[in-house]
Image (cartoon, rainbow, N blue to C red):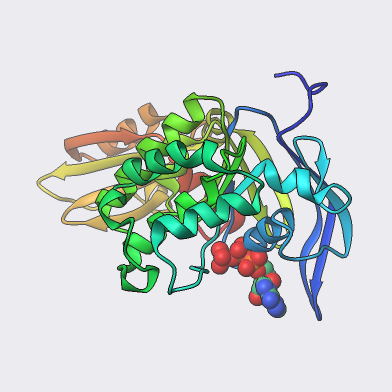
Amino acid sequence: MSSSQVAALEISGLQKHYGSVHALRGVDLRVERGEFFGLLGPNGAGKSTLISVVAGLVRADTGSVAVLGHDTVRDWRAARRNLGVVPQELVFDPFFKVLDMLRIQAGYYGCGKEVWPWIDELLERLDLAGKRDQSLRSLSGGMKRRVLIAQALVHKPPLVILDEPTAGVDVELRRTLWSFVRDLHAQGTTVVLTTHYLEEAQDLCERIAIVDKGLVRVVETTKQLLGRHPYRFLRLQLAGGGVLPEPLRPLVTSEKDGVLELKLEREAHPIGGVFQALSSAGLEIGDVQTRDPDLEDVFLELTYPGTHS
Ligand SMILES: Nc1ncnc2c1ncn2[C@@H]1O[C@H](COP(=O)(O)OP(=O)(O)OP(=O)(O)O)[C@@H](O)[C@H]1O
């Protein structure tokens, strides 16, 4: 990955106020071409505002955005041609038929009949082929969401931004969508994803930015993020019950059906020490498991430090 090449997305010094709410406080972010990039953050962090600015739907107070080197204000046409955004909200004319709407949408990007086979492929891949002649208002919420995804891709943009694409959708659509997005990515499309399903982000994204209170707090590879977590978790069941010795009690994060989960600092609390303390207290271990932190643990630690104990 060379920083001398044109980035898929380059965001510099972005600030946005809504009245007295300072939604973006100077966001800098660079997404390289070909990346599968995650944008995570708690509710109200500013992710949707950021995406709306990139999409040209909201104007920033200061700062700039470039899509494949095209400034989204000065060179908005080229920027928009290179970008496909799947928004959270469903926005389209309910009286259009699915196929007509997609062809019209392609026309907005200056694309004609040459993309019709691609539109057919989109309908096929998103399991919409049987709905092509139905009006949008007659579709279920899940089907509408599929159309929204197709709509963002009609012009084959090299950068695709998906804002919470799986919020409230069923397992089948989630699977269809991810298999399709993985294929797009494998063919060279840059993908930026926001999701509250951290498991999805952990599985899919190569690099992740965590946004909080209008600022990018961390940008790291998913592997680095997971590795930076200073804890590991130990689940144990005591054979015949018993009470944990005093020094171990503050480490317990949960207790359910006789299974205790302890959060151990890697350096300060080696697992051997825990076993020794149990044995000195005359306690016998029935069952034991360790768990490395997942993205959810890291996320909570970074965005709500101290509250995740
Ligand atoms: N149109 C608007 N008018 C006023 N305030 C807004 C508007 N849109 C967003 N905000 C505020 O800006 C801040 C950032 O909101 P934003 O929707 O960008 O966050 P988010 O990270 O996308 O949250 P979520 O995960 O809940 O979608 C919040 O305090 C929100 O209330």
